[in-house]
Structure formats: C-alpha cells, structure tokens
Length: 535
Image 1 (spheres, one colour):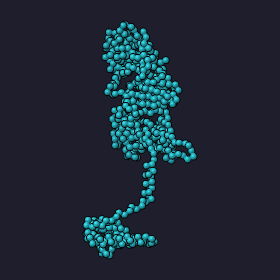
Image 2 (spheres, one colour):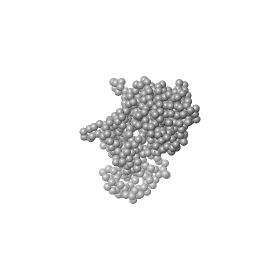
Image 3 (cartoon, one colour):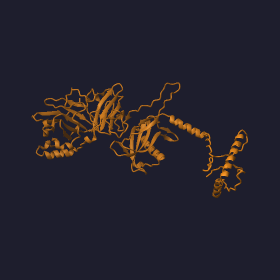
Image 4 (cartoon, one colour):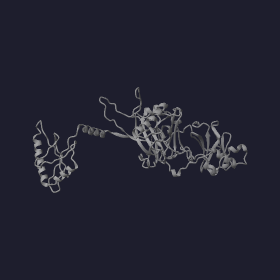
C-alpha cells in the first residue's frame, strides 16, 4: 500500500497534471471514502505511474528549496512512500522535527531528577493500628516518624496541615516466624509525633489523617469504628534526598537532626532512650536480608543523661525480651526480639559517648522451650501429695522434680555475671565485659550454712538461683518459712537463705524448678513493675 498526503489549499486537492485527474469524494473532515481509497491503491500499482510520481516529487523538493528565502511561499508537503516490491527506488527517512519548548522542559526536569542524590534510611517506630476496609478483612497502618519530614502547623482557614509520606500497601512480617500482614506505612515528622504523645487530640488527628490519605491515594476506605491499637511493629526503609550543595558565604553544612528520647505514654515519667538495632551474620557483618537468622543481635543504646552505670538494670526476659532500666534518670527500654537469645549479653559501655553496646547471641529455636505454669494448680498438687503433713505447712511444701514442667520459667544455670560452677574471682572469657555488679542483684559465696546463690528480678517476680547439685539435695526438704528458704543436703546439713524483702513478696504464689546443678525459687511480687535494690 502506498500512503500519500495531499496538500489542501483553499479546500481543493493539489494534484499532478502528469498523473491525471481523479475524482475524490471527501467529507467535511477531508476523509476519503472507502471505495475511492481502494481505487487509489490500484492506480499506484502501475509502475509507470509510480516512477512518474517520484520524478514529480523531485521537482517539488527543488522548488521548495529555491523558495525558502522568499517571504511568501507555498510549500508542498511530502512524506516518505512505501515502494513496490518490483522497484529498486528507496526513500531516505526525513529528519525528526526539533523538540517543542514543553518537551525541552520535560527533558530538563527528568535530567535534574536523575542527578538528585538519595540515601536509604529506616523510619523510627511509632504506633500501629489495625482495622478492616472495603477491600481487606484486616489491614494494619504503621505510623512512624523521621526528622526530615516537616512539622504540623495550624492555619486559620485550612486548620491543621500535617506533612507525611505515604507508601503503598505491602505484605510484611512483624517477627521472623509470624505470618504476612497487609500494611500501609505512613511517616510523619518526628516533632509532630512527639507532640502527639502529649496531646490525645493530635494523636487521633494522625489516625484520621492516615485514613484520609489512604483513601485519597489508593481508594481504600478504612473502618474507623473498628480501629484497635496493635503492639505489632513493622519497620520501613525509604529514600531521602541528600543535600550536599554548599551554602554561599557560609560554612554551615546540612545535617539531619538527631532523634530525641521519647516520653512513655504510660504516665510513669520514664523515657525511652534512642537506640539502633542490627542483625549480625556468621561472618560478623551486618545482615541486610531479614529472612536469614543472625548470629547476634546488636544494640547501640544512647544513655546521654546517665552518669552512674552502677544502678543500670539489664535483663533478658524469657530469652525474647530485652529490658534496660535506670530509675534515677528514668530510662526504660523494652524490646521484644524477633529471635530467642541467650541471657548472657556481651555488654560494653563507652563513658565518653555514654553509649551502651549490647550483643545478644541468637539461639536455635528448636532447642529452646518455654514452660508456663499455674501456681494455684501447683499448690493444689502439693497439698494432694502431702496429705500426711501438718495443715499449717501444706501451702509451704515445694514441688518436686516431677512438677518442674508446670513451674516457673527456666532460667539458665550460669548467670551472666559468672556465679556458676566457676569461682567468683576466676576470670571468664565468655562473660560480658562488665566491670560492676548492679545493686539490684544480691549474691553470696558458698559457706558452711549459706549456699552460693544469686537473687535476680524481673517486672513480676524475684528469683533465687541456688547452686546445688540435685544429687546432693533432699528435694522434699525445701521449705519457705519465716522469711527464709531452707533445705537439707544429703549429709543432713541444713542450708538457709534469708529473704531480704518481706512485705513485698507473695508467699502464696511461688514456683520451684530443680535442674542438674541448681534449683530456682520464684516468688511473685505484690506490686508488678517495682524494682528493688539489694545492697
């Protein structure tokens, strides 16, 4: 098929007298009828007509070139034609017209975008809520913050203006073993988020802003009546622009403002310190892939207001929760870990930078087990097993080794401070590099009447770890009586530990766990979350 564009002048068709005249019917938009188009195609199949037409085009091009300098010209527009298979004539492609001004602006804009430098950063976790929508039965919205996003402002005509960055819904895990959830990420400015922790109305406004933004951008309507605050945390990585152009006549360099400590929402007056967390692989390098199980989990915690580290509380609760607490300057950090870890962290404190570095060794989940217990049931079993004893002593009788699976949580025999099978003064290479013993831990070396033991505590209980080989203990002799723990070893010698706190401990709910080289007595606190000093 041959395509020809005719120049329309004064609503007439310009044609070549060499080819002849063709009667072409055209509508008001100058379109050929289907019949005329077929006739025209058949006409150009004649080689003589085609060669004559090419000669005519050459004449027209010469005329156009000679008239370029004239003020009034009439140009005949030609286009490349498709040649017949029987001819050897080929037309050269015409050069592209120069880009229009709008196209030039778009090209410059694209080049400038490509030159912008960015870097990948992690958002700072805030709060998370879940609900359902017209598209999903369950969807999570993770509200995080980052310093470079602008702060909320108030205007008279438009009300609150809250800058944010919203990301498309994605499937994400909150722990390594958890299922995948549908999560929207919205990131506010750090100043805005910190202010929302003090004002309930602003916190609600952030939730409403999140829902409105999701609807406007992704047309998903979230149900505000079904919102529930979730404890799940979903990290988010995103790119920010790097500003590295020097300011004229100034030595000031742009730096992102550092994150600030956060006041906890529980009304306790404690602050959550700034910290970073990284997964370390078997090659001691940072793991970028969250699916790979790390060798260590490393924390760097900034304790800028801490002057004395001797009263710092450092605990690994149930091998899955890190607790760092200091009551004098009111620091409290609790982080639920994605992997189970040993309760012997490697700790280093930089006194100059006031930075606490913790390395938590990850343990194999297949070899880790949790044993939960019901103390009331244990006491009932005790009473059934000791019907021959005096009624006044029934509640104080202890569980034997057969009850240990339903008693308190397993605590490792070797404590992180090294009071195990080795001597207290003996150096241990596998222990953390701590140069102090916190006053919240009481310990005692072995003597004739007082065994070697440690007292450790968590939010809910106080644990007495007593180092005694199970083959040396008369298990039925372990008693809690008169604010003390007593037991008898095989040579009929009585061992006794005095309980330093009397009124703050519940003697009705307790648990005993007997292991190979120690046994543990767990006493519940009357006031959960209160920590005591043993000096």
